[in-house]
Image (cartoon, rainbow, N blue to C red; front, side, top):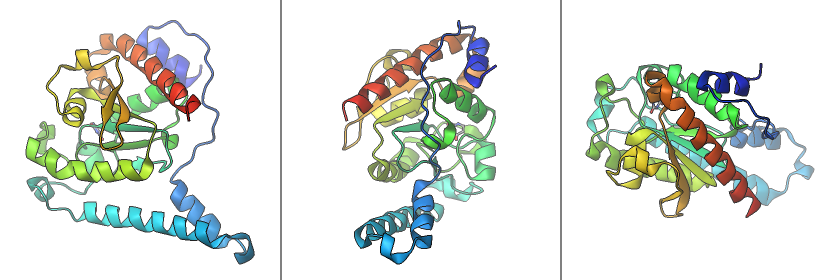
Length: 245
Ligand code: URA
């Protein structure tokens, strides 16, 4: 049984066949391209392309270094390490969670625990393997005991996310759960009313769709059916955004 079929079976949703994204995974393309350029014969490499790739790499590494030493808020005192974000720096789709949990704080990567495994199968069900997208959180540091982010912490951290967004320029953002959605959209409207529509985020007015947090779905499996409705909406919006490009 395919991963999608397994996920749908878990959801209790009838299986139907849909086209999946057949693009090969593009893990950390900046790194891969830089390595390819470095090993290419000099005559084959156009200097402006090399310069652009190098500048991109420098910008990413500068941001990563800034985040890893950040002391803008008190979470810097309790974190094990910052959780920068992971994935394809040319992604069409960027997924944004709330904040690192215990597993993420330990491993330095977003969504690596049980919620991450469910997130991976949700995305694979609509044709997106994890390495093809970019995953980050509203906060780069774990709040102690997984408490909700404080407004001051969000204010300190959001500029980092905005910079990641500016560099990736995804076609679509997906906010996972009430906390991520309300903080990104600066609203206190309940999640149920934020689902099912396309919002806009940031200076680029990037389209943003809200869906359930996978950790919530693990606690409330009966909501998984509604999450499948959201996933189909996400897939359709991405197809529409690509077609209009
Ligand atoms: N929950 C989140 O919101 N983000 C993570 O990275 C892990 C769990």
